[in-house]
Amino acid sequence: MPALPSDRSAVPSTLAGGAAAPRPRPRVDGGEADGATPVDGHPVPPLRTLAPLPADPEARALAAVVAELRDELVAIRRDLHAHPELGRTEERTTRVVAERLRAAGLEPHVLPGSGLWCDIGPTVGRHGARRVALRADLDGLPVPDTCRLPWASTSRGIAHACGHDVHTTAVLGAGLALARVSAGLDAGVRLVFQPAEEVQPGGSLDVMAAGGLDGVGRIFAVHCDPKLDVGLVGTRIGPITSASDEVTVILSGAGGHTSRPHLTGDLVYALGQVITQVPAVLGRRLDPRSGVNLTWGAVRAGTVHNAIPASGTLQGTLRCLDVRAWEHASQVLEAAVHDVVRPLGVDVEVRHARGVPPVENREGATGVLEAAARDVLGPASVRLTEQSLGGEDFAWYLQKVPGAMARLGTRTPGGHTYDIHQGDLRVDERVVEAGALLLARAAQLAGRAPAEPAPLD
Ligand SMILES: [Zn+2]
Ligand SMILES: [Zn+2]
Image 1 (tube, protein in one colour):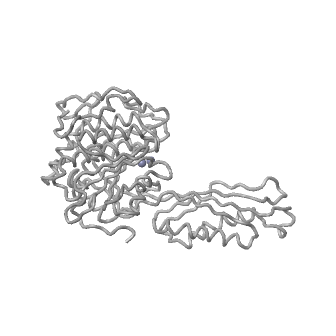
Image 2: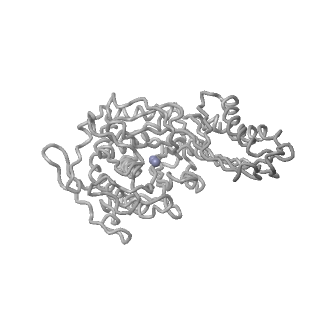
Image 3: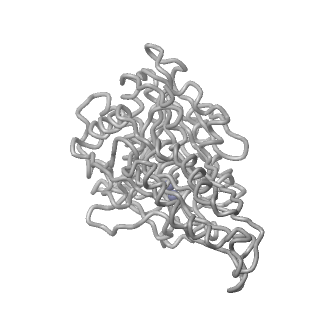
């Protein structure tokens, strides 16, 4: 491994085997004749087998720094993969990241429990520029790891099946590289390592409540995409993920004999009206382009053919592709249920558990990510990506500051297509260098890009 001039130690001591999870320190050997460097005995080809050297001198210098860090970053990623932790229990992961940042002379701000952020460069940049935040998520999923690699999970029933180990290492690598070139930064950078992306409420809300966005003018993130080749980046202006909320409707009435529905509230009939009418009302009162969809998954009422029950419940999900429709949907849903039930003489309660809004990529920030990708991964590295129906709690940050998320290819060209949230997920580890480089370059460029208005302006 190349010596890191500004570092007190190249690999965090936690990697040498912390008390929580003893594990041998990853062995990093010298390069091989074909350019591939074995990490833990497994070769990782350099990113330059995919992307040309950047033409821009500043981007080229950054690429050289990230390339020096590459083997160590892959070793850290493998270590994190071997020790996944569930949302809000990511203490070891937090420690690994914090120790590495401290070893580089940085001062991470560790959150209570798990998660951290770390500032690099000026608090107020050139022309008053606010900080550029790079966000990673730390948590694994309650899924058994079936990747069958030497760095498979050692935590029973938990795996980094969403690639958050890659995101964490990419943001760490971007930060370590930017720290070395911080004299040239037009805006300060904040690395945000949030806990608990996979659970609700998401850890982004913890970070924001703790002041993690204070002084931040823009925020960027990446997410692994196993359908995209490594070295490619998927972008999209506007929504890139979707909202998914849980809806429960509880009806109650006096109950009675089925021969006398006129003397009570016919609760089962009312349930039927809610089941069919409310989704139809939403489809008329909200823009159809917003893709609002209310689908019931459970209905419970009654026990016998000749008694009108006194209570019943409906449970379903409300999905939405558009953030403005999502913000309005709760009001329309509540009114629609009450209006449908009103003539039928039963009482109703609506519980709408809001999930996450869609991630709404801003035009300027998306342009920064695309320019960064073209600079460091090659002019043909950017692909238009589609909107997914999945949710991402990165969306909460974008309700406060402009920013964008890109998809980061993890598939080996010509190789098997894996899926996220599956225990057998494997990534082409060149993605670690690609992600670190993309985010570091985006932070450099964002410091110079014209400001976008905040979402609430
Ligand atoms: Zn996930
Ligand atoms: Zn994820």
